[in-house]
Amino acid sequence: MTHAFCQAVVAALVLAAASPAFAQQIDMGFDQPCMAAFGPAGYPLNRFLPSEVSEASRPKVRGVVAKSLLWPPGETLKICFRSGTQEARARVARLASEWMQHANLTLDFGDISNPRMCAGDNHESIKIDFLNEGPKSGFWSAIGTTSRKADHSLNLAFLGQDELPRNRAGQQMPMAEARRLVLHEFGHALGLFHEHQSPKAGCGTEYYEEAVLAFGALRGWPPERSIQNFRQLADVPEFNASEVDRKSIMHYSLPPWLFKGGEKSPCVVATNYQLSDRDKEFIGRVYPKAPQVVATAPETATTRSSRPSAQARLVEEYRKALREAGVEPAKVESLAREFSASLARP
Image (cartoon, rainbow, N blue to C red; front, side):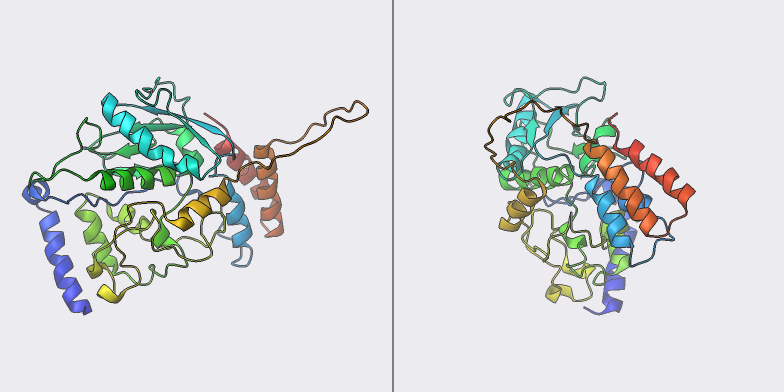
């Protein structure tokens, strides 16, 4: 595909997307890409990475911040719904629970046949809605622990009714597609990013920016969100596997006209409808099962020492990484306090 041809295609799409009539008539089909949300506080990996930190020191600082988005292994995540029929909520709960087969986490929906509604006091870990209009509509999820502070942290658009939706031709969404959407968004809720944004994927230099903007405009995304959903992420071991996984549930299936290589671009992949082997291995590594330990009682009584909490240890790691990166002491303490506040439960 030539760049000139790409520009012509994009121009036509942008003009069409700008038309209210077109916006009402277009049928985007079942393959709905998600709009990952990084929360009102901004993208954490950048928010807590001062500009004066050198390139050599950035990975260590970024790695500590990345850990803050992971739930503690073994934690029970209380999940609730803000809307949706009983059947729709039960379907989401059944599909999302597949992650528990591979991650040492418990997704607590309450009664799996009639999952709980949100109490409205924001004490739950993940809060799901099915908005299909307005700025919070579409398919998206807050990343990992940022879900705690949001009163609406995951959205599944038009999956909130007893029956799966139908397109304009009357065809009903296949269950495989509903499963894909739920697993993908819950992947974000567990702390995973888009696979096509991995530095190992090579997609960051492959796409045409104007094509990405048009792609987002067709879905009602603002320009900054369109770019955010394609921008290459930092190389952070906590979130990116050693090799890109083109079969990952977290990899977009994208049209060839977005990329300079067209059909030959490695970023053009078939739609992935299930967790890949690497998805399962990776989430198990991120949330490992506790080892079985057999111990005998001590011969003499011991006093339990006061150990710092996981949150306190993480803040100290962050403070140390900033110091070693040469950040000015007063700024280190200011950032450490803000980082600590971001980890606190609501």
